Image 1 (cartoon, rainbow, N blue to C red):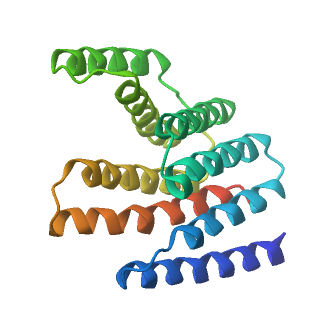
Image 2: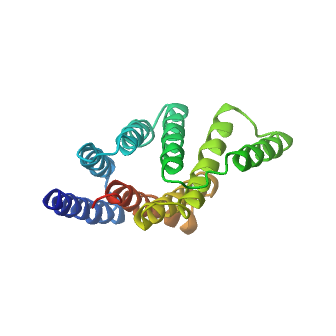
Image 3: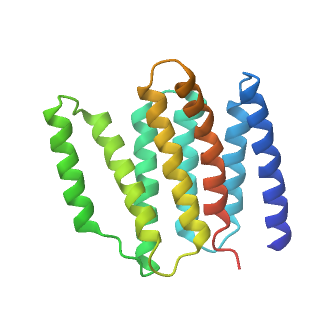
Length: 200
């Protein structure tokens, strides 16, 4: 497993540098980025935890719709919701406080706020549910028997999605460009850390 881990990290490092250079030069790095996720999935398949295998499969599925096809966004976000539900189950098995009642209250309050602003629809409700659970999973990971790499991975995941939100909200300009660039700068390392966090 140590040899496989070294090979995995080497490949992911090359992919990481490559897509950053491509992004800086304005080249299409879609398939390079997706290749990074494929390798994450393949590496998880060699592990012993079915939770991580399932989570990475649905992560790969989400990225196929959101990154490769750049279409069917509700399916992509729904796939990410499944990922967060799997993470929640995984955290529960590691004696972490999952704060399920707190999640329900927070989500209800956010739904009401979105409704009052006239912005509540199925897609926005799904995005809200996904991001709320991702954030709560990160908080939950700080307790219980979970590797620090997993917590760092989830934290980078949160940073990625903050950049995604800014990408969708900001007008064209320097802040928009920075947020767009940073999405995958945070995202691929997050998935790599999640993939390797339980290696012994």
